[in-house]
Image 1: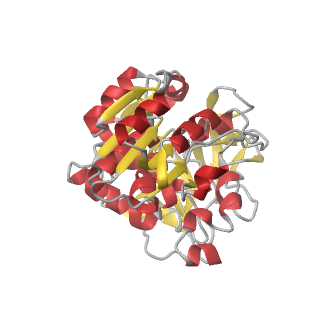
Image 2 (image 1 turned 30 degrees about the vertical axis):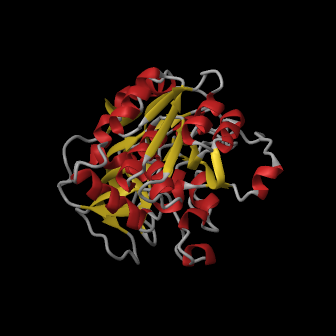
Image 3 (image 1 turned 45 degrees about the vertical axis):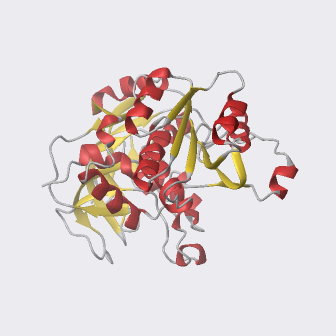
Length: 372
């Protein structure tokens, strides 16, 4: 039996979101129907809104949802109605990649996350009597209720502040995961972060948790650099500063142990790579255009310098999101300093503020209050 719910429907590329009534399926095998309390807005949502996903509209986006389980489908284990959950990316938990502890690279990852459908190609929602693309990251959380899967839901404490925790599902997990899970940064090592939006600032906070000796932050916005210092950056640089690369190399006496590109720009990736020392690692987190290319000096690779791409910071949400929740409870991962809340009806205002860099992490409130 279907359920009438409200969702932010995107009718065409770069159109405003329009709140509409849609019909949501009953949960199928392995699925949870979740009453969404809040959803973060991620740059991936805006990229897909701009047509980068190359799939047909209309669609419902959103992939940083958090809410309360209302009902479960057959075969669901470990969840029951009333559970509070943070929703993250989908992985099948059965393929070879998942079995080797890398669910972010699941063999069904594209179908289950980026296609806008369930892994089997069906859509959970119907709008005006027709199926609508509505399985984005197996949630499409710009809605009051969604169908998630037990594999992309992470249980948190009942009564948890879901409005605050929602962005842990993607952006904050990606930045912090890159530092703590992929790099496994050790005390005394040095990190450079290029682009201090939500992902980059999460990386800065994680580096402080890990005990980094130096944390270099680079951005075009002086206000964000000031916040980066508050959150743990030891040195900050405006991105358009002349001789930026040379300055960082001189200050570090040869480069940093790790660098992160959080923008998706070939120029910025080259800067991040150039400030990485021999035997160091440069990681790509930013979402580039489909045809973006970068030129890298082969001699640098001969000296052991590595360039790696990362999805979701190489983090497994089932393990990593509870770790971030614990770090926040200890006061060591203050995500409240990055978030700004908006009523669901103000979704287009939230998008505008994010695109104009007024807001770092907009969070939509679908239902107010803590999980019960």
